[in-house]
Amino acid sequence: MKILVCIKQVPQKDAPLKLNESGTWIREDVSYEVNEPDAYALEEALRQKEKHGGEVVVITAGPARSQQVLREALAKGADRAIHLEDDKFVQLDSTNTARAIAAAVAEENFDLIVTGLQSDDFGAAQTGVLLAEILGLPHATIIIGIEKTDSGLHLKRELEAGHYQYVDLPTPAVLTIQSGINKLRYASLIGIKQAKNKPLRKVAWAEVEPKLSKNLQQIERLYVPVKQKKTEMIDGPAAEVARKVTEYLKNTARVI
Image 1 (cartoon, rainbow, N blue to C red):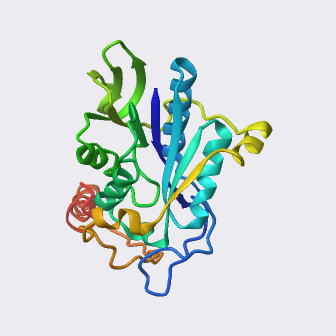
Image 2: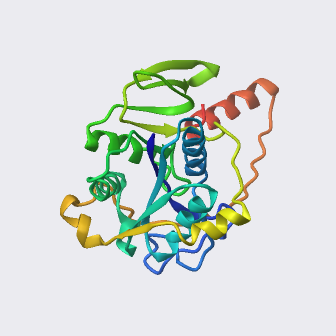
């Protein structure tokens, strides 16, 4: 199987939130890491390769620092990498990110394309399914089990309330992988050394720009919520207090 894994570099979960001067995104001087859902997608791709043979290719879009997640993937066992390298890729919405990836791999014929369910920064959960639409491929989301068959793939999807769905898809196909589908591996010392010599193809902004359009979604402002602590005492009979609390939760807090 020839498998493409889409991975993203995101700010570390425990990194302090620092915004740029315009307040539209995070500053560059924070710590970054691989998007955790994408790490599970990579692990599943490597396991499929170990079972059935083939090749695992990783791709990311972002500035030069994003190459770190590609090197980590190569150290874990991916065969080669593709880097859409430019600061401009950071500001793309899900649609244009999918278009850029599709343009970068237009000459490749992948049997399977996998992404994480969503990114830890935007959290849109759209890039994978939009990529499938652009490429004209069948897709399935929230995958927790993959079995290769003679006709394609037998998949297990996680639904709500502990329910599951089993679907069969022909290949090539696009899947978004649920976190926790497997146990993540660590890169070995040998893998880290080998990663330095594995192919990494860089794709410039100009190569994919003709396939892009104006962003359909734009961030106007980010801000850190102001912490407020306000205690309000409600006196009176129990029935009256319960009524006032219920009204507050329904009309003011709007949580019920």
